[in-house]
Length: 113
Length: 112
Image (cartoon, rainbow over all chains, first blue to last red; front, side):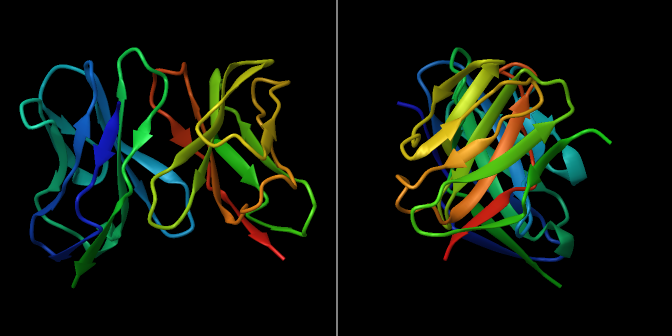
């Protein structure tokens, strides 16, 4: 069965420091992996996705994510955090042959000035 | 201005009442989705539609109904059979069911 785990409910980072939001997944075939961000009372915004190719994927707002097949992980990263990055971040996965996205529970990212 | 719109932003339901949430997209996407979001949980799929006049149940379809009469519209009805409807409802669309999903701003449903 497909599954996604975001092991941290909340991540606290000081402004200007690097940030990492963790995501691990389980699928039986090749994964399609996604990161979305949600600001309070808003819809989800697409950040980036991994389909195939380079393991390091660059996305919107300076975010990037690294696909690690051996560790079945797809951690979201940013070299220098901004206060405006504070939001709820969701990781999602689906198999190549499957329509349905499986969602993590979300990680609340708090960037302190 | 292209995108996905949802209305209303807030909706109040009385006991035993059916309510309908609107979702419209002008992205010319074939596939549309309805999700429910509860605090501390990931999104759960209610229904999805890959083409006009066709839709399938997701993981939590009980107490909900949909229609897809037009490509750009995918309304969701929360029926009186849904005993715990209070949640944030998100509509999404994609250009084919295997492509990236894009989301509307959401509707928050509250029970009076």
